[in-house]
Structures are given as C-alpha cells and as structure tokens.
Image (cartoon, rainbow, N blue to C red):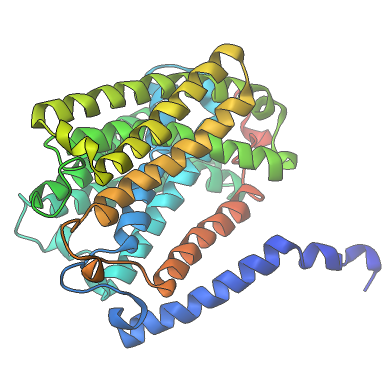
Length: 389
C-alpha cells in the first residue's frame, strides 16, 4: 500500500481515541452485567432509594441540558433572530442525541426494553405525570429527529425529501417548544408527590416552574459550551458563516441567560418566602442550598452580564461551564442529595462505581456519535448545494 494512503499511527492512537475506547469497552461489559445479572449487581439502589443517578443525572440533567434545541430554534424561527441560524443545527443535533441517550439510560434503569412504549401506548392512567412525560419525550424525540434529518438528507443527496422537510421547520419548532414546556415542567412536578422525602428548601409547589425556567438557561449555556468545544476541536469543519456568527451567538445567549438566571433567583426567593422556609437557611442544608443558588446561579449570571457588557468571550464561556455544573448540581440535589434527607447516613443512597461508570459510558457514547456526525454531515457548515445566501 502506498504510504500516502495510510492513516498515521499518531492519528490512530490519540489520547482521545485510547481513553474513549477504554470507556466504551468497560461500558459494554457493565451493560452485559446489568441486563444479565440485574440491578443489584451494578447499583446501590434499594426500596428506600429506587431512583439513583441514572435518573438524577442521565435523565433529569440530560433533558435539561438538551434544552438548547428548543431555545435556539425558537430564537431563530419564532422570534426571527436570524443571526443565531448557524447555531441551530449543532443545537438540534445535541438535543437529539441528548434525548436519545436519555431513552437509552432509561433502558438501564427500567430494564425490559421491549416494555418501554407501554406507558404511552398501553397505559390507562392518562392523568399520570409519567404518562405525560413519556408521551412528550416520545413526541419530542420524533420532532428532533425530523428537524435533524435535513442534514442527513443533504449528505445522502436526497434533495426532494430534504426540501419537503425544510418546509415544516416553523411547524416543528412550535410543536417542539410546546412539548418542551410540558415535559420540562412535568419532570419537576414528579417530585411534588414526595413532600415528606424531599428537603423543604428544594420542595416547592413551584417546582414545575423552576424546572422549566432553569431548562432555558441550561439550554443557552449548553449551546455556548458545545460551540466552544466545537470551535476548539472541529474548527476545520466550520465555514465562514459559522465562524462569523459564532461571536454573536455567544454574546446574545450570554446576555439572555443572565436575565433568565436572575429571574430564576427571584422566583426561588419568592418560593422560600411563600413556604416560610427562612429558618432552614441557618442549618447545614441551608448553607448547601445557598452554595447552589449563589455559587452556581448568581455568580455565573454576573459573569454572563459582565462578559456580555464588556464583550469578553472568555467570561461568557467560563459562565457557561459553571452554569452547566450548576444545573447538574441542582438536579442531583433534588433527586439524590436532598432526597430522603431525614434518613440516617447509613441508609442514604450513594452510587456505586459501576453506576457512575455506566453514566460516563453513555455520555462518552454521545460525544463519539456527535463527533462522527459533525465531521461528515453539514452540521457546522452549509452544504454547497443548499446555500441560503
């Protein structure tokens, strides 16, 4: 074979490829253990703690951080902010993969994958929040697939079908926003059925509102974060338009996120006041609550505001990472840390190494798939046969 056609050894065995290969191999082994030996083999779950990080992280965090899809689409196609157009496809791809991996993670937690459609197609309890969440996630995943499909069709050369799907963009965007509003808030409402288990500082009748509003700035932050990583590692796949509009996307979403985050802080304070939970703030749990609210919402909101005013992209990108960590902290606090808070420490849930490794496997799988698609399909650039301008 001619040496020019060979893949250089240093390109095959990069640090990323080696680490990713190890994670995927370990994940496949854990998958086999989970589905052949049962939950007890790989998790620390029990009757007191039936939901672990596969729900708290993989599902609750995954859905929140995938909100960039509906936020970016709404900004571009409903509110007419065309300067965000180049961010739509990366955001839609991230959202589609995020929801797809949420469904994959549910298979690990629930087991019996063939019964996953039962809550939607066979359930008689249509008043159940789980029914509503299941139906909305099913429909929204379908919407995201259709929204993503034009990129795949351009890659495959299916021009007529692609043009037909593109005509549905506005309708799909509106439908996606409605569905996101429903299931983002309903995930918060799920925890309203456990007032005696969830700590009063995190339990509130406003939980659905908290979840929905926090998903908005989570989505914006994820778009900035994902865009920053793409600019660092996939810059050669970006066209001039994407590179030119990227600064405006960062500044615009950073400014919007700062407003939404401070509004979120306001309604959180109102919630504490209405429930008269001020006295809990002087306890250890209160200190942890303040760390979450001030350290991971107020602080990055100020960073966003200063960065937007001074046009400091570094501040905004740091704020995006900090906000993503804050969303993860909030969802884990509600579902794991502050859940069953009254139980003795010996009876409290802490994830096993295999649970954590499985979550890392699922996230890594998403990164690999995103990289595969973004390097081959017109996600970070416009296909030359479909230029819009």
